[in-house]
Length: 157
Image (cartoon, rainbow, N blue to C red; front, side):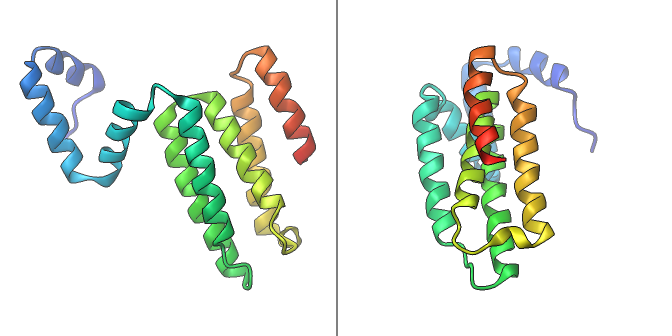
């Protein structure tokens, strides 16, 4: 089955009644956890981005504290899991500022892990990749915000 384009979907949705739209949204939410999470974000948390970011940061800190640092393999696997969650939250917000803030927070937490992670190339690449992504998103922000976040990026380098 071929998917319709976004413009085709948009024109079809405009012609539907409110009850039909509600039914479609609820049906979408039933099928996938990610759809339900996105709908929850859009309905309840999109208005207060800073509170949402604080919640995500708290979640990230808890996950980072639970990472198994006894074995390199499990440490890397735990960090990858945290990154998947962060990437999901970045997609939900759709904000460059939120992306920069979350990626820099992850790098700060990664530096704070007791074990000397930066011996291995995999951890070094993971860390540097997040810094590069943060710098790329930084370019889409206002000049004042760029300067504020650039200070944090320089400290993390």
